[in-house]
Image 1: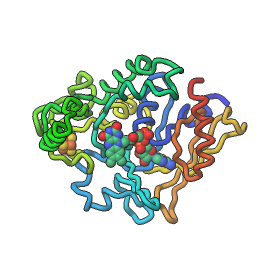
Image 2 (image 1 turned 180 degrees about the vertical axis):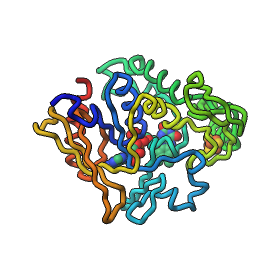
Image 3 (image 1 turned 120 degrees about the vertical axis):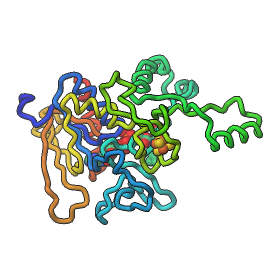
Image 4 (image 1 turned 45 degrees about the vertical axis):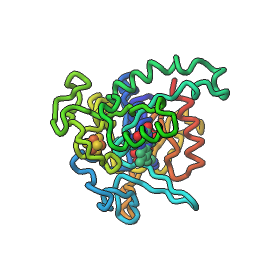
Length: 291
Ligand SMILES: Cc1cc2nc3c(=O)[nH]c(=O)nc-3n(C[C@H](O)[C@H](O)[C@H](O)COP(=O)(O)OP(=O)(O)OC[C@H]3O[C@@H](n4cnc5c(N)ncnc54)[C@H](O)[C@@H]3O)c2cc1C
Ligand code: SF4
């Protein structure tokens, strides 16, 4: 089937770190790309003021809660993950470390290549895009951690964290300081400490301020509040003739507003409800990613 017969060349499921980077880079190569995201699009000022704003904080669409944090309960633990346009970048610590040398030296993969060197240019790019900078001050918490390290004789291992946060004049908004004015305005971190509820100040360099911002400028369509519930190969079962992706409104009991999209290729994690099917398709989708 010709590329123009599809709604998109590529469909990306999820607008978190993996999805946003893929969307921008595919758009730069000239593909028609859409990103399907089940969460809402939040402006900084619309993020919750506290976790008590259940409707904005918790994600439980069957109960009418379409906030930014999803808690999955297991027998002994729960796992949180974020749901919004921008995925995990909308509510996170913004701490962005590079893996340490010991990680790259692991016996599982060291025979495959010099990953520290191979990944270095990509770390550089990602850090530039996400505006990573070492925290320029020592907070009370950090002072406590430092004194604890001193107590245990390991103070030399103490470092301030690299973070994707704008540390200009606190509370002052400026024209985009990262991409020669091409990106959105930023406001200096006020040290309010609300990063894990969402930065309403506009200091966190979330994906909507960099990768997704530029992806949309290049024509990528972000289809928010649409949950992918099925992915089916069109024609040949190996996906070589494209895919049909079915979406619906998250949490809808009746008016599900089902819509389908077709694409030549796709990128996803294990997102659809039918995990097993999604896992198989993921392998196929990713296997075709370089073609
Ligand atoms: C509270 C918290 C704080 C964190 N702080 C840090 C930190 O400081 N530094 C750090 O490096 N990491 C941090 N992490 C981890 C980091 O957020 C994740 O590793 C990262 O977001 C994973 O990126 P991803 O692209 O794989 O997925 P995500 O960023 O989770 O994006 C996946 C997106 O896909 C969407 N989606 C899922 N299923 C579907 C579907 N069926 N249809 C449509 N859309 C779908 C989701 O809504 C979500 O937006 C933190 C995590 C949490 C929970
Ligand atoms: S302004 Fe507050 S929420 Fe935003 S990055 Fe700084 S401490 Fe975190």
